[in-house]
Image (cartoon, rainbow, N blue to C red; front, top):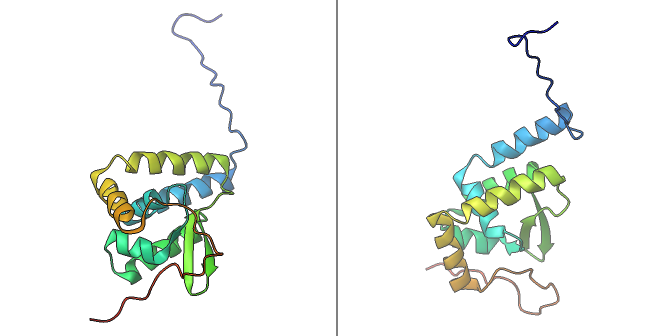
Length: 149
C-alpha cells in the first residue's frame, strides 16, 4: 500500500521517432544556429532564394567570411544551392525534417525581431528589391561584377 509520500509519477514521454541519429541531427542544427552570422544569413534567406553576392553585399562582411558560414550551413543540411552560370543561389532546404524545419522557422522568426536582422532586410530590400526566387530564364545575369576602384 502506498502512502501520500510514496507517489509515483510515470511520465508519458513520446519520442516521436527520436533516435540517437535524430538527436545528433538536432545537435548539428543548434550548433549551426549558435553563430550570429549564420543566424543573419538564415533570416535573410527566409522563404526566398538569394544569390551569394546579395548575401555578401547585404551583410557587409568579407566574401570569405560569408562563404565559410554558407558552407557550414550547407554541411549541416540547412541550405541548398543552385548554380546559375557563375552565380550560386542559396535557400533554406525545403526537404528538412519537420522537427528541424520547426526549429529553423522559430529561429528565423526570432531573429527577424532583432535590430541587426531588421537592418539587413531593409538594406537588402533597398538594394535588390523584395526577396523572391530568381528566375533562371532572365537574359540579364543576376549580379554584375564590381569593378576595382
